[in-house]
Amino acid sequence: MRETTVDPGIPFLIDPRGGDIEDDVASPKSRSLIAIGGRLLAEISFPKLFAAWIMLIGLPAVLLGLAPLVILGWANTISRQLATALAGFWSLLIVGGLVALAWVGGRPVLRAAEQSFWSLNALAVQPVYALFREGLRHIGGRLAPGLKPRQRTRLYAAAALGGGLLLSGLSLWSVLLAWPASRWIGHAGDVFTPLQLIGPALANAVVIVGCYVMGAALVWAVADGALGRPADLMTFAEIPSGVRTWRIAHLSDLHAVGERYGFRIESGRTGPQGNARMHRVVDRLASLHRRHPVDLVLITGDMTDAGRSAEWAEFIDAVAAYPDLAERILILPGNHDVNVVDRANPARLELPTSPGKRLRQLRTLSALEALHGGRVFCFDSEAGRLGRTLSERLAPYRNDIEAFAETGGLRRSLRLAQIWDDAFPLIVPPTTEEGIGVALLNSNAQTHFSFTNALGIMSALQAQDLAAAMELYPRAGWIVALHHHVVEYPTPARAFSERIGTALINGSWFVRQLRPFARRLVVVHGHRHTEWIGQCASVRIVSASSQVMQGAPIESASFLVHTLAMVDGGLQLARPERVEVTFSDGEDDRGAVHPPRPVARAEPPATASPDPEHRR
Image 1: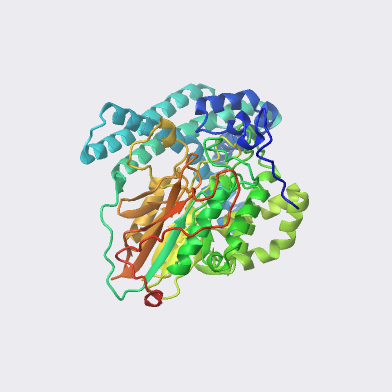
Image 2 (image 1 turned 45 degrees about the horizontal axis):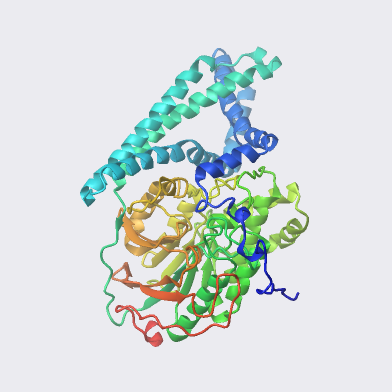
């Protein structure tokens, strides 16, 4: 289709190329979170909210509350007949059936229980705890801005403990309120009045969850405070000459839009339009690669702005224009790729049965498969080894995926649900015993609001598979890549809202899982659009900035190329090379991409060899 353009000489009362207030409707950089939240309350669909509450909270709460009524009532009934029952044939049959059920269905049951456990923490523990903790940190930092590093560490630990105590107290209050309405032993007559059990069941659920949160909040607080404050990485490695090195270009949060004059959700009209900056970044990287080759290009999520088909098409076209670069690219899902329900309306709510989330997940998997499906392996949890490649894993479902993309349907959606969870972690194994492998993780929480799309969580099963994969190569180094930041940065936040609702919900727990491998891994991520290199509990962490999310107009942005090497069984991280990308030489921010012009070559780091032959 021929692209149409608007004659710049035609006067407009309202120039459509410059956008308008509607483009800022969901932008936290243009509007406050209070204003966005107010609009959410004004425009939310209450019938859909009620249905979602029933499916996601109400029904699970009733089932949780009924469990003690059934179990304790059953135990009370059979306790009087225990001796007789144990001698009977039917008891032996029941015991045998329970053993068979545990043997056949144990793992799926455990998997469902584990997912429910982390969902409970994501919903009831960590967000409120993080709100209290970061609020105390923020207040303490404002009251005493000149604290020394050791004092900031103490403040961090005190804020963590204070946040846990506040949440534990709030939970105790909810338990005391719900206790009078609770009932714990069921009776045979309850079968004839099931509706009367809803109230006690909900009260039971509040008591059970409240008691758990009371203890869990204190555990989270003590563990968080003991982990230590994240700190900047003060020294980089001096890699010896003659050692095999790997050059890793780290990009993130390119936020491709599907329109020539389109704005991005977060920045609105304060940011650039179209994809000119993204094209310039990829072109600059390709130019660098031709002169000083990179081994890997890692893009840690948010390749698109809302996971729409047109946005994925723009991103794929941008990287496909450079085949030599495309075969080195690895991508992973960001929250904007899978969790944005409606880019224009944060009040939009998806029901769990809606095809929207599944479509975004399948679009992302399709892009992963197209770029590197034959180079990344899924992990076989049961066998404890690498399984099939992503392309092989998706092959049996191709017809169902294509049919779902065409027509949707609840039955197909349920059939495809497990594909997304089972795909991660995706592993690029090291080619030698002392090589470097890459683990691509999915850190996105299951959310159904655009307003809550930024939440992140790391499942225990994914962390277990990651640890098992790294243990298969005990002498290799690892790049552990995810989208969300695992810890809050030690630098002061400009606004309190920056500290809430963006970090990995169970980030401190995940850092603990990585500590045994800290010497031979580095964690890389994006999400916050902030460049930072630091460490927490001896785990090194590298954050990438976004080259397209800065305010407009700007003349340049940059990204980093990291040099890694395995030395004496440890992964060494050299001082990175900064690559500048200019936006002012004949290129505008209105979506027009002009023929690329050469820009100054970035200087290689002192610790990296410029000779490609040296790295083979």
